Image (cartoon, rainbow, N blue to C red; front, top):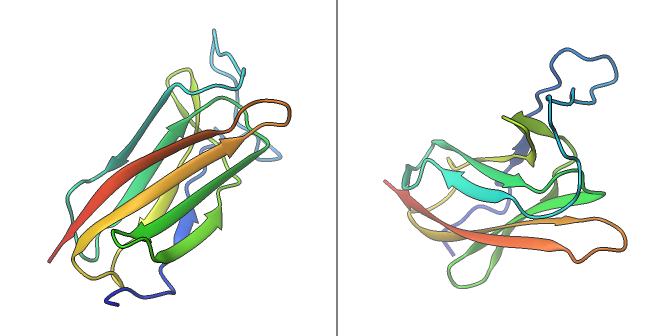
Length: 130
């Protein structure tokens, strides 16, 4: 109760203007799959603010963002198909519009998979305040 099932997760894409939408490789960039860093912000966020996740894992085959209430109820579950650059790290960045969410604690699970390797799964708490 208190959340809206239609909360949206959008994708932020930074392709550096490259045709086809694939990001450029930064000098010294390593596309190898594996956990590098993760975060979410702003946190805490006011209701109506856009909250962005950050999962740096290199090039994955699949990435997902799943938002739960603190009681474990599913709010939204979406694929994150795009990549963005942060320095030399290749990242997946889900963006969550919080206008339909009630104040409280939410759990954002960001996960990435690459065939033949263990999945990377990170959970971050998000506090929504009025």
